[in-house]
Image (cartoon, rainbow, N blue to C red; front, side, top):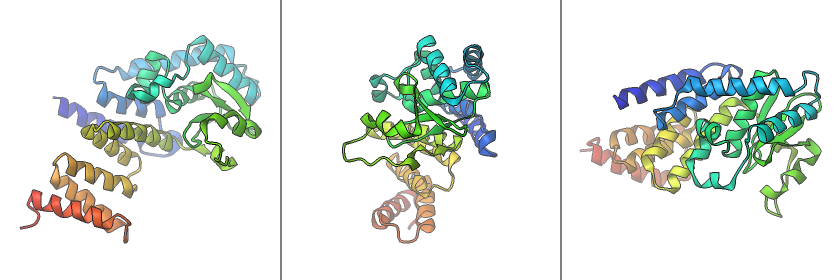
Amino acid sequence: MRGKAHDSTRAAFARTVQGTDVEMNLALASLLFALDRHPELDVAQYLAMLDALAEGAARVVPSDADPVEALTALGRYLCDGEGLRGEQKVYSTTDGCFLDRALDQRTGLPITLSVIYLEVGWRIGLPLAGVGVPGHFIIKHEANEAAYCDPFHGGRVFHADDCAAALGGQFSEDFTFHQAFLASVSRATILYRMLNNLKQMYLRSRKLHLALWATDRMLIVRPESVADIRDRGLLYAAIQNHTQAVLDLEAYLSSVPNPPDALAVIGQLRTAQLRSGWLN
């Protein structure tokens, strides 16, 4: 039964990420991949939690507020009123990657908290977007004079000119901050980045089956990502699913002319072919 439920959730996730980016229900997609890991999760309940947060936000964010006022009011409500804030402990556990856990525990990775801010803001009509600065994630108000908000650090608000100083603690001293880092990212990019966080955590802890799961979901979001096709193939090989490894590694080698890792991948492919009976 679990296998069928897993397949059904995968199909629902795939349907949710289809279509144009603006049509994507980011919260639903985030909860659907969480459902694979937390089968007791009630998706409707967590969507209702976001609706309730938005109802509260609508009462405190003035409809005629300028970008700074709107983000300040939103941050004050979600951080001070609802207790949403970043904590360093989230970097040591996968809980911080999941939207349901962030809503329950009132903390999460910067990108997960940003999704909550985005979803609440969108529900009350704010033109918000995610911003994937290197090693961190914030949100922006996309009005003419954009303002930025850091959900992980108490919802603090700043202008574009102040971003380098406001985020300076995230970077090394020799790091050069570029305004291009403040570009809006798509909902698909946010989802992909959330899954990649999980993938990297699972790889570090050698949970290869779970790293494979995350990589597979990443490929649903970005099916053209040849690096992820390669990684999925290598993970299939690592867990002894040689038939699937052959399919992915062959697809990678046929898609990328003279890749720098060709010898290593070909070696893995030949081993997988031998063990799966593709060569005789």
